[in-house]
Image (cartoon, rainbow over all chains, first blue to last red; front, side, top):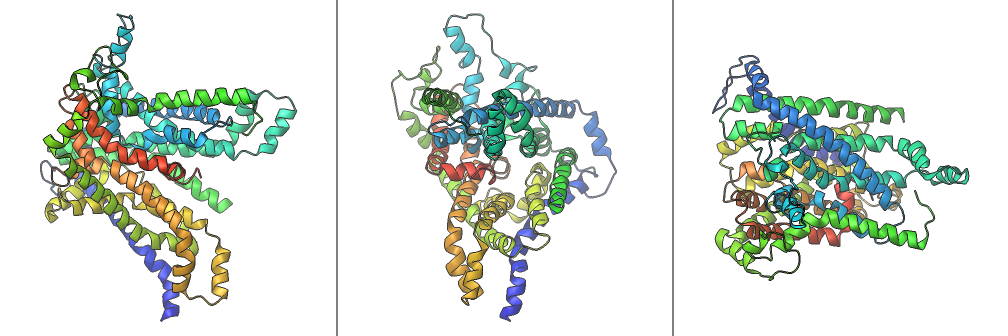
Length: 291
Length: 276
């Protein structure tokens, strides 16, 4: 008995987690996929009607705005957060005093809910109260910063807040990368009189390629999932100028009573994530078998 | 890249890093400062930074008007409950993967972690319907289970990276001395695993505390935690900045303090073990 237990216990204790994730994630995704093929409105219906929901989705100007926003927001957010994160990491790597404290401060935005810190951002971005009012108070009467209420620019305020939230986190990833670069190579390069910026661009940054990849994956999936950020800052407005796929889906499911649309939009989001994550997982698995 | 740096240079770098830190910290600091102003001072033009009449009345009003303590209590129960439940399920799984690895272990781990990347909206509606069916909507029990499930992959992953750091030789030595599986777990593994488990609890508590997507969608009033409270409070904007700031400050204070006293774990947790 005890020998049998010792052989099988490892598998048995793993099973609950495994099954929980399997059912919770894939079971319910399967349900969503099914419903996305029906004519469900306020209540789910289960007779399959083909791709009508997807046709409606792609014909919807609101969904169009949401997808456009996702690409603008995603591209800007990922690039800016990575550049800032790298610069912050290089700065912190210059033998700073009280480094531990500073790292924590940089990471705080990531540890706090955007729903909560959104209050401060609303104030900062509010034309009558925040940056605009402050700069005008300094004597620049014509200064204008009304992005948050301007349909053409509101999406950039989401980028701003998202970058604020994540760049400390990206910094921490890059800092770990910088610390793992072989010090001998750098010393050799310094002895050869190679200027510091060349050491960074030619030796250090190329050797951190895997970190760039993981940072990209993390930021990309954060961008696609972004929900509370929009809810906290603009609520999708003005109009639906800052709708993202997640808020579109939310609006369809809970205020429009259109489950079919909600399900089909969720499936498209899912496909976008899969398109990014699957190649990454594949490369991770292959790297493992090669090594 | 560690380099030799002169003393002045080091001081300058530190100052710059702190200046950037202050900039990053500003929105948080501003929320805290605003919570001590009167409503009129909060929307004063130009903004008042430090020289205003500090007052505590916002905190009293927030509690009085909207029963803040109930939301706080919900947050504590939800974050604490889902964390403990998750640890109970995940410790055996992570233990098994770290100490009795099979060929598939790495695949299973990566697969579990990958599910965390999928957007939650894909499973929202079926769970919503299930909750209506089971009468779990706006209940603490239901939300605790959901919060546990969404964070389970991260808990397993974190525990796994910690358990992997426990040297296998110690286990072998214990086995050589004739320790049984039970003794091995009880006297050798558990004491060495406790720091890792504590860090994982901390990280997961923070994640569950901040969770907004599920709490906004699955609660109404009874089981709503602080995130839902703040979201509902912020609609009549402009008029209640000071009170909203007071509510926000009370919502972030536990995380600010927890994070400060466990800087290392916070950094490691939020980077999924990449930074130690």
